[in-house]
Amino acid sequence: SQQGEEDPQALSIQEGENATMNCSYKTSINNLQWYRQNSGRGLVHLILIRSNEREKHSGRLRVTLDTSKKSSSLLITASRAADTASYFCAPYNQGGKLIFGQGTELSVKP
Amino acid sequence: EAGVAQSPRYKIIEKRQSVAFWCNPISGHATLYWYQQILGQGPKLLIQFQNNGVVDDSQLPKDRFSAERLKGVDSTLKIQPAKLEDSAVYLCASSLLGTGNTEAFFGQGTRLTVV
Image (cartoon, rainbow over all chains, first blue to last red):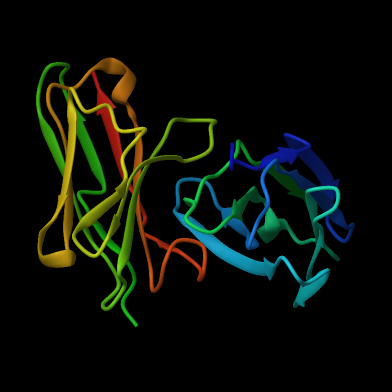
């Protein structure tokens, strides 16, 4: 299956702390994407990391990719209450589809 | 740049009735996706179009769901007849190139309640 599996299912932290979410997948990939979904809204693209990249940064976001372990992680530094959302990873391989797992539900308490 | 537009935002129907959702993707986006998201779950891909051709519809319940993308632009998703388990948010998304090569942009979704 191309679907990614996010871990943990739920994460609760205090504002200012860092949040780490993991994604595992089973097939070879061209790239892997992370999305965020606020309650009742559509998904928003956060970052895309290609298979030949090991790490990528975007603001307070840091994504790593280990293709040998078929895993990726998303780190949010200095979290804010506004980061409260569900986070999804979507591994992509050539000719594949954009398929999402169950996501990680992040709660950041003020 | 205008985003992905979906309508209606909310719909309540009785079981066995029909319903249709509309999606207008971002101009120039060749790929269009329809997802079903049941409360507490991740989005499930129903169908994927490349221009006006179907790339994948393996998860589309074809006995009751249908989708079309006229002239490779707007798309409609129809359910006929609806069942209680169809209650969900239906998300439309589009992307510029082939799947996964670029980011997908999502609409706000249509929340369907079947009673």
